[in-house]
Amino acid sequence: MTTTAPHPVRLDKESCYRAVKSRDRRFDGVFYTAVRTTGIYCRPSCPARTPGYANVTFHPTAASAQAAGYRACKRCIPDATPGSPDWDVAADVAGRAMRLIADGVVDRDGVDGLARRLGYTSRHLTRLLTQELGAGPLALARARRAQTARILIETTPMPYADVAFAAGFSSIRQFNDTIREVYAASPTDLRGRRGSTRSTHGTVEMRLAVRTPFAGHALLAFFATRAVPGVESADATSYSRTLRLPHGVGTVRLELDDLTGEGTAFVPATFALEDLRDTGAAVERVRRLLDADCDPVAVAEAFAGDPLLGPLVRATPGLRVPGHVDGHEIAVRAVLGQQVSVAGARTVAARLTRQYGAVVAPDGELTHLFPDVATLAGLDPEDLPMPRARGRALIALCAALAEESIALDRGADRDVVRAQLLDLPGIGPWTADYIALRALGHPDVFLPTDIGIRDALAAVGRDPRAAAPLADTWRPWRSYAQMHLWQSLAAETEED
Image 1 (spheres, helix red, strand yellow):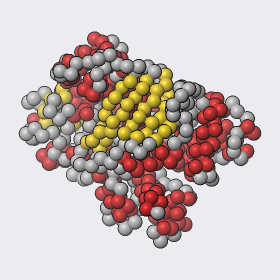
Image 2: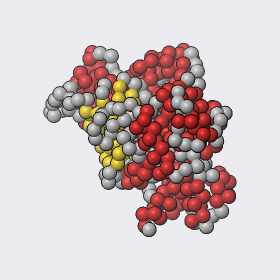
Image 3: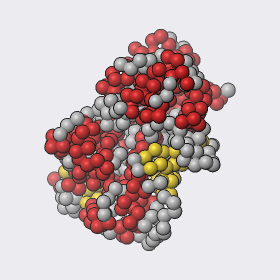
Image 4: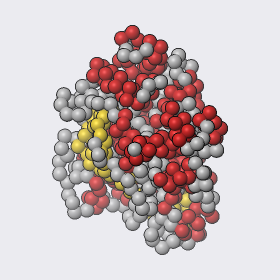
């Protein structure tokens, strides 16, 4: 079996069984093992006795195992793992659908809404997902709700009624029935003896699962350097920001530390939400921010023999590609960052926020939402604190985003989005690719003209003019190569 976690649907039974026999943690969340004799499904690394080959089947998703009549193992808790990195990066319909379902699109807009976002009829989409993932969109959304509910039950003191609606269930009865069916336990059984208390002002504390190693310090430094005052804040151990969510606004505070060991670790997160129905969407967007579904072991092995990247990967194991909670925001910030320093872009973003961002709290560090694209699209380029050409590019981008002619979510076709961005005046390859890197979660993006990349290559004696052909050898993980080169500059600065 390869170590790069291949597409789970294409794993044959022999390969899957070898992973189960070795209890290989790298495949947790990539596929699930269902045992006929017990009626349960497990993660590949489950510590229980390995079932007989004739008694197991393998499923690409937890929803597929549940649809086949299996319940989650109480010992290994298979749905508590990070999501499959294959579905996180896949550009096909299944991968795009999984990312939108995780964001709660089915809960908010139904299967028809999901199908419209992907450009298919609901019937054809259901057929595609069932063929590819073993379950249709309703079953996939149900599995996601059950997983969110379990996390809330086991890691927060929220009352069960609040948990039900925060996880996306439409009724208490539906919540209770689903939990009993999926986990063969009641919500009270899952929580144990801790009991519950009333939730306070929509505050939810939980732990977000990530694969290890996880370079939390490097991620924190990246966010801190670019933090826009009023929207974001960072200190020595944490990063916080405001959130624009489907039903209201919120904030999140993340404790970011380096995490080692094997398998899964957890990032503490505290959400303050105006509407608890946004819990699922908030969690998913913050997981994107953290690149939580990355398989760092597979990435490291891909670069292990590279004379340039190998030492950088060993110096910062588990480095992530920072995502974002709002594609529109990062697109605007990408334009602001054209041909200026990080500090300069941050200053302009702060000015726009003070002038045009909605106030969410008059005091404290997190006071504003970043300006929405509809507001910015209505401005005169002459009034923006930037060169006129860049101002026109910003207005054109915001207009396209406000009209929804360009979609910057994890369900978008990345190649189509790039072409649409390049058609806009003033948007070049650097801007389009930076948006793909952070807004779309593209794992294979490289910015050969970026000044940081050129400086990093020059520092190790490589010709910056050869950046593009050099990066071709790093496919399909060029986004991670990009981050390691940027990180090498940050490390030099810290040493100085």
